[in-house]
Each structure stands twice: as C-alpha cells, then as structure tokens.
Amino acid sequence: MRLIVKSQVFYWLVITLVFLNTACVASEHYGQPEWFTEFLKYAEYVFSGIFICEMLMKLFAMGHRVYFASKFNRFDCIVIVGSAFEVIWAELKGGSFGISVLRALRLLRIFKLTSYWVSLRNLVRSLMNSMRSILSLLFLLFLFILIFALLGMQLFGGKFSFPSGHPYTHFDTFPVALITVFQILTGEDWNEVMYLAIESQGGIYGGGMVYCVYFIVLVLFGNYTLLNVFLAIAVDNLANAQELTAAEEADERANELPDDSESLDEPDSEQCAIDMEGKADGNILEMQHEIDEEYEEEESPFGGPRPIVPFSSMFIFSSTNPFRVLVHSVVSTKYFEMLVMGVICFSSIALSAEDPVDEDAPRNKVLQYMDYCFTGVFALEMCLKLIDQGVLLHPGSYCRDFWNLLDGIVVFCALVAFSFAGAEGSAGKNLNTIKSLRVLRVLRPLKTIKRIPKLKAVFDCVVNSLKNVFNILIVYILFQFIFGVIAVQLFKGKFFYCTDKTKRFARECHGQYFVFESPDDLPHVETREWRLRPFNYDNTVNAMLTLFVVTTGEGWPSIRQNSMDTTEEDEGPLPFYRVEVKLYLWMKG
Image (tube, rainbow, N blue to C red; front, side, top):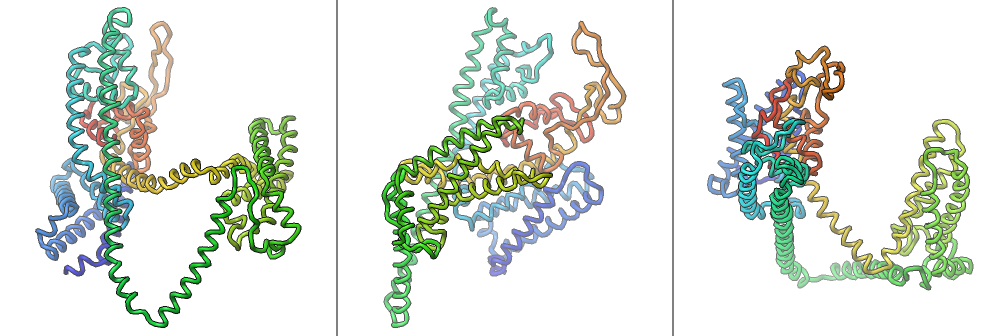
C-alpha cells in the first residue's frame, strides 16, 4: 500500500481528479439548468468519496504520525472532513450549513504541483514563511483600524447627514466605521470622505478644516507605512527562499561529484574515444560561440570596423569576394548606421503625421510616397546585410540576431502591404491592415541596447525578472480563481436590481414610475427594468473580473457596497443587509 501511495501513477491520478473537481466547481453559475445542478450534486458526492478514500489510504500506508507530520496533509484532512460534513448536513437538513465555500478551498490542492516546480515552489515557500510576520502585522493593522474607527465615531458619529442624502461611508455604526477606515487606507476616494467630514463640522470657514488632521495621520501611518510593510516582508522572504533553494541545488551537485569521480577512475579505450569526440565537438561549438561574441563586442554604438564573417554568404559570396568586401566596408561604417537611424526617426515622424480619420487627405498621399522611400531604404539595408553576413546557417549570420530578424519581419510586412495597397474589395482592405506592422520600425533603435553595456545590463535584468513575474502571475491567477469560485457560491444571482428603488422583487419590477430630478422641475416617466449590475459574480469568469477590479483598488467601494447590499437570489438590494461580507473583501484585498 505504501508503494502505491508513493508512486507517480497515484500522484498524477490524484492531480487529475483535482483538476476534474476544479472544473466541476468552477462550472457552477447562475441560471444553470436543473439537470446540471443534479449532475454537480452527484459529482460532489463522487469526488468527496474519492478524496476520503485517498486520505484513508494514506493514513493506512503511512501511519497517522507520518501523515499528520505534513502540514499539507493536515490541511487536506480538514478540508475533506469539512466538505463531507457540509454535504451530509445539506442532504439531511435540506439546506447549506453556510460553509459550502470549504469545497472551494480544496482547489488549494493544486499547490502540490509546486513540489516539482522549483521556481514556483520558491514563491509559495516565501508566502508560507511570511505568514507568521504577516499575521503579526495584520493584528497591528487591525488595532490601528479599530482605534481610528472608534475615534471617527467620537468625532463624526451622526454628523454625516446632508440635504443631498446620507452617504454610504460614515461613522454612525461600528461596522460601517471599520469599513470606512479601511477604504481610506486603500486610498480609494479617501479625499471625498475627508471633504464630507469637513463639511459635517461646519465647512472650511466654520472650523472644520482642523479635522483633516485625522485623515492625514490615518493615510500617512496606515497607507504609506503599515500596508507597504506587507510588500517588504514578501520580498524579503522570497529572497530567502531563493537562497535556500540555491543552497539545496548546490548540495545536490556536490553529492553527485563522488559518482562522477568514480566513473572517471575507470576509463577504457572506448570511453576515451568518446571523450575525444566530445571535446572536438565542444571545441567547434566554443569557436562558433566566440565568433558570435566577437561580432557583438566589437560593434561600437554606431557601427565601426569589424572583421568580415569567415563563411560564404548564401553559397555565392566568399569572404574574399570583391563585391562582398565592398558591401562589408559600407555596412560596417558608422555613417551607414547613423544614416539608417536618421531614416528611422523621419519614418517615425511620418507615421505620427498620418491622418487616420480621412484616408484621402492630401498629406496622407504625400506621406505615402515618403513611406515608399523609407521602406526602400530599409529593404536596401536588409539586402546589404544579408550579402555581408549571410542568411542563417553559420555563426554571425543575419537571421541569428533577434534585432535583425525583427527588422526583416517589419520590412517584409511593409512590402506585402504595399503590394496589396491597390487591391479593391474587402480582401484588399483586410490585407492593407498589415501596414500597421510598420510601426514596429520604431523599435529599431533598441538595437543599440546590445552595444551599450550598462543599458544591456538593465535590459538583461528586466528579461531575467520575467521568469519570477510569470511565477507570481500563476499564483495570482490561482488565488483569483479560488476567490472567484467562492464568490460564485456566495453571490450568484444576487446582483440584480430594479431601476425603481422602491421595488425589491422581479415580479414587482414592471410598469412605469415617476423620476424627480429636482424639486423645481416636473417629474418624468420611465419604464421599470430588472437589471444586472455590470460587475457581478454570476459565473467564475465574471467573478474573476470583478475581483480583479477589487484588487486594483480602482472603484472597489461601489462593488463592496453592492456586495453588502445583496439579499437573496432574484431579489433586490437592501442597504447594509450583509455587513459580514466585508471580511471576504478584506481577505481578497
């Protein structure tokens, strides 16, 4: 049994079941047919049974001490037991116990993949290592929010009542005061709350300006100090995790050295022959690499003398061919490179001067002929470099350089666009859109990156950081997905509202009603409509989009308020009906 549990087949079988369970949980949405609801119900029974069997098999094979020694096994056991309890309670009592979101937490089992993905494991390990520090900081932040919420209730409690109405952000009750302080810490519309507070205390000239000190202190110490410490903790633990993994890899390589030395102590004639062949191949590759580096290092920022490639170009021009030598002497001069850079600048200016609205404008015709000249210069440059460097097969050839390859693609697309510019009909119009690729020509100055050491170092740093950014993006999308699935189970079908705020149910939202815009004007009649808010949680995709808006912090207070006002499916909102929803949004933020 232990061999079965530890086998790769068992591991990948569990991972496959996790993905299938994830697909079933994520497919839940508002308005789904009854048969699909029944299918998800029985699928939940099947997956719960399978995961319970997996847990029991591991307990029997590994023993309870070894099994519960792993933190992930303990977490997995809690999620499985909680999910099974929720399913049994819902079946016996005919309703959810309110912890159905525990089923979505099983999606965290996907993190088992990190054991085979070193860089992603570093990131997850850094997050886990930073939890202790983050929890301490969270407690400190909660105390900070608590103190300022109580202080805000003392200063502004019952004061946010204006002729225009009662705003959603106020300090009249303790829960709403906590939400208001948290919104100020995020920096979203905090100045509007401050303006309301000043107006509630008599306005700018009535002594209300002194109360802005409350908001300034709150923003300075909360937003710019406490919240930014989270990032510092995560970055510090990420660096520690990478150092630990690098040390582990170094230990593994050190452990492999004795095996290599034993194999070297017993050489035979066949092994020696293989080594000699390997060395010969390695010397050839090393020579080619040195040739590539030589051409890269000897180029000055605007060209300059450099040796000709010691290989035949396009199987026609040898390295001593007079015509190729002449072309090489022209291409390798700094004046040629400066001329091309000047043409690039003029071409970019011409592209920016085009009129995209009126295609038949007189200046567009002039710019079109200028574009022919620019493209001809770039095509001539490409041809000269192809003759000088060769196409692809040998080191130092034209297509082995990324920037040359980009130039070639841009020139080719421009020539194709010109060839179809006079075509009539929809085909010619569609092919003519390839002309937009000519704007890539402005990227040609980036060729100077490899010729300026400091700029190249910065560029290499950016490129190398993309790997870590990709891993962070994977973890971010995974957390977005998990919170999106939880949000669907919490809020699906609850973001509907009637344009007439006096009507709460869909069956009442019909007919017409009066709209009073101002006391001095006569009301006008509008038709009642039952609408769905643009940002909602009716399916996983919409939920992830809504949570992305919440994460960015731009406009999230309206989503927060709509979430707290939700009641039941197919019912309209009630102000602050579910204040406890703020905890979910705080965790997501």
